[in-house]
Amino acid sequence: MSFLQSLTRFRTEPAGTSATGAATAIDADAASPLSVRGLSVAYHHKPVLWSIDYTAPPRGLVAVIGPNGAGKSTFIKACLGLVPALSGEVRVFGRPVAAMRGEIGYMPQRGSVDWDFPVSALDVVAMGRYGRIGMLRPVRRADRERALACLEMVGLADFAGRQIGQLSGGQQQRVFLARALAQEARLYFMDEPFAGVDAATERAILDVLHTLDRQGRTVICVHHDLQTVTDRFHHALVLNVEKIADGPVARTVTEETLARAYATARQDGDPRLLSFPARRAGAAE
Amino acid sequence: MTLLDFLQLDLPAGLTAVLASSLCAMLGNFLVLRRQALVGDAISHAVLPGIVVGFVLAGSRDTVTVMLGATAAAALAAVLIEAVRRLGRVEAAASMGVVFTVMFAGGVVLIEQAAAHAVDLDADCVLYGQLEDVLWLAPTGLASLLDPAALAELPRELVTLAAMNLAVGLLIALFWKELRITSFDPALASAIGIPAGLFHYGLVLLLALAAVASFEAVGSILVVAMLACPAAAARMLTDRYGRQFALSLAIGTGSGLLGYTLAGPLLLLLGMDWSLNAAGMIAVVAGAVLVLAVLFGPHHGVLAKRRARRMAGAV
Image (cartoon, rainbow over all chains, first blue to last red; front, side, top):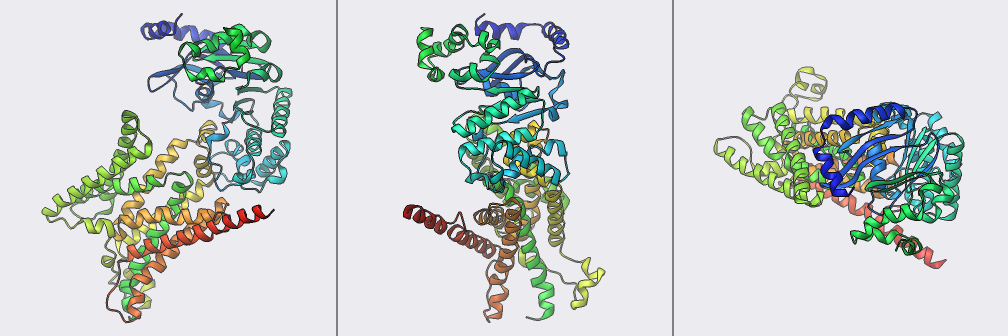
């Protein structure tokens, strides 16, 4: 079905039909850490995500891949309720997101905050505890100790008192990672954790991801680098506005699905294509 | 200058100026930390038509009606700014610039209309305030400072500002960590269930109320200066969140005291028979403090940075 067809179909479809279908599907996925039904998001009337159905595996590391502008970050933000969805339903462990915020950890892109902000690395990691502390209550010593332990896990205990602007890019990324850890969530969303990091940070992130995996958590990462997807992740969700494929990496990240994901970008004559590695682009010809 | 003069004239006027300065200096922290200093400009100007309408409806400077009018104007400004940004597809700053100047101009036109109907309000008062009108005629001596009957006669502007200072101080203390996370990382705040949008609009509401509480006595120029200068100066002096607030409050209060003293009482003591506009002088002092902080700040100052570069070059 072409994109335009799905668009018109969506508009003309009676409201009731899709809703009943979604309800049964969600009952079946009650145990899944994340189940998404018919999720659509648009910015300025331009669709960014269209009618995404997705059920995350009960545990493991999931990569969300696709060309630039495919809606990968938007997918995460829409799951968290940070951007308004046109339609669709998101359930976390079978319940609405709003009721499960304490079980969800989030690591935004590093560029999304102002690193000149006058707070220390420890202050930032302690923010991961705010959800557990609750409104109107102060940060207690136990929370600061927990935050310090998380900084230690990413090898930054010595930098706890440092203002965050004085850290290197990789160290800042690890502070964000430590903050996500401090959330002690069962389901994690991470937006490009490996973007532009040094070797030490890459190792720290991989360590943390494996620890979370061993503990039986689900981690959903927006990932840019197609070369490393199969080594680092167990599952993949391939997006390009619509869902292209999902499942175990070996079956999902194939020349065929990638060609489909990146071909739309190519037809648009759109700069998204630039992120497609030359080797794969050649194979897709 | 006699003690009675001080109690009746300089104490209420000076204290009002200081309280307006400290109130704006506290709120200004959030604008500077969120890199939204322009929002302070926008709100303090956009409330003007609301103030005039409230003023005309009440027929007097009744604080509650004027505050309601200003709040409505601030809400209208917020809606208009968002509408212009979306419909015009322009940057938020551009949209703010358009909306607040138009609303301020509308307010000035409304004032002219109202003045024709003998309403005691003029554009000068809006810009510079009327600090000389803040009088406390009740006191007869130092004992009046403890006399409930005399204290009940304290000027309305002074009482409103004191109450606003207390309320804003309490709110900041109460929501200390929520304000920190919504300023630093609103996305994470929303993800863990702290309503970042609500905090943003709460801040806009407090700004509108602070602008109204301050404007009548000290005028909008001082409000704009005090929302930006003390917090920006503090930002040059520290990298600690708590210290940022303490320094900003101290710089705001200190500028208020010093500026007021320089503008009137000091000239009087020196035997001059003229004085300067206190609000203007306070704004100038705050601006001077900012310049000093930019030059001499321990880490972020121009000189410190130059020294650090030289040392790096030497190695």
